[in-house]
Image (tube, rainbow, N blue to C red):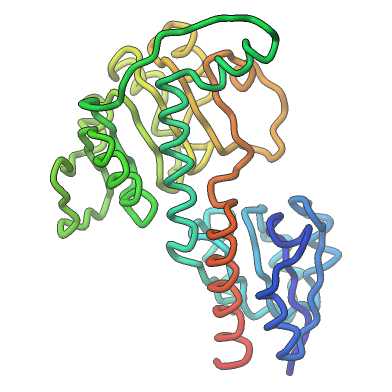
Length: 307
């Protein structure tokens, strides 16, 4: 029997998407807990009970919400990451969790490389000064011949590897489960610490662990002047350690698309002149949204109509 389906990704809840009509055609009712923004726990608690399906974004899905989600059969992410969901708790309640594997890989990878080039050529800094009528220049660096460490070599990481190789960079990859069939010329796998210590720049494309990868100890062992690009999760980096590394020049630039809370609160780190910020826009391209929405809807219908 059709029922209600909640739609929570900001890219869909504000203006909708033509693919969502497939759910209406199957007789489902679509509800938006927080149109155009990331829903709070209270907004989820008001909406999710009574829903049979949930097309979910990156909003935290707490045990409290899962407890209230009576009748919920499937959570379908419009991306790859599921660290916002307690998978064990979902499974215990009979809720299937689906992912849109690789759907936004190209979009995230292009942003990561764009942030990398922006850092090497100080594009945001130059714009800010010129916009104020100030003619200032900060010497940049070319990426050709420099070493990029790609941490996490899944669909997104592999796209970044190929783009960086195309720019003439040397690329070292780390992945806990390396796919040795992925071996383009100029690329090699290495252990995490070896990859980080050899890098002129680092790009993160992995889920967070129990503690940050970049803490005081690790940052102190990396090349002085390293550039860090993070389009994965904010928890990969210790904020205090990163701020100190920027102040000391150990890190030249941090470019980040991800935050502990969205929108983020102002902080000494985020307002630092050598930090480049984008508003979790990696997968926010027309093409990525189309692909991810289509896969997420497919996964909903697979579980709710064609189990």
